[in-house]
Length: 384
Image (cartoon, rainbow, N blue to C red):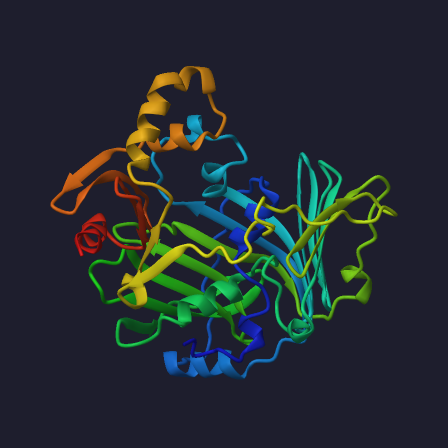
């Protein structure tokens, strides 16, 4: 359970990876500029946690930069530019606005166009200028004051997820003071005690006056540079105008409506069509829940999911090696899986994907095992 469960200052948006999944792309920037350490009164880690718990965020706007260098193997040639590899590498820049618990907006602008995610009360809009498409979702009545799953994050949301791991498995300390987006900040440092974790440290820079997380960094074992980083480069705590959260569909936009499990696509003025159904009368996703469980706790948590059919990696490898040249960089999953190294042991056999901060094992008997842990920990779980 998060130590900051009820703190809106840390929970107003969900991870920035969500916006990358919905929007894709990004604008490359240089590295965050290093600045001299400010002179701040000493504060303990416990005091910084209290600061986070007692802070109040009424309004905020600014520019957030997300950078990832997860050390993935060179599979980019098998994945399209907007695919998984593109989302897990490089730099992305977003403009964010926040006004209370039910008004948020994130905008991504790059050389190919503009994309927005807007929440205004129960209405959530996702718009992409490249295809002039928009998705509209109406949140349930009881969710009117909760965040929408599509909304992306600032360093605050990432910090909340890391702080949820604070227990005996985590060493908490205070790092160096810093200047982030022109604001003096303290630094809270979280370090896993479990040797199986690939995370060396999580560093959270906290505004010395407003107590809002301004930067979130994750360092992998053996590296002095962050493998993942979220940081404000410009921030204002003035409450944004209400107009920032209004969405007026541009001419010709194709709108997809999503309400109460129904999905329909219509141009403005058209009556939405009925949701697509399977032959048995069920809509896609109705009552369909993957077989997923977790093993372990805190930093060493491993997720185990049962996927359809056994021998998936083996079949994928055969398909990939058979006609990879013809497929090219199409993002074909079979080609991607076929390029992963084959591994085996007393737990069985499969394919392994490793990065700086995570490992993923796809076994030939149809299990996907993933965690921010070493491959050896995945093999232990597979064996059990």
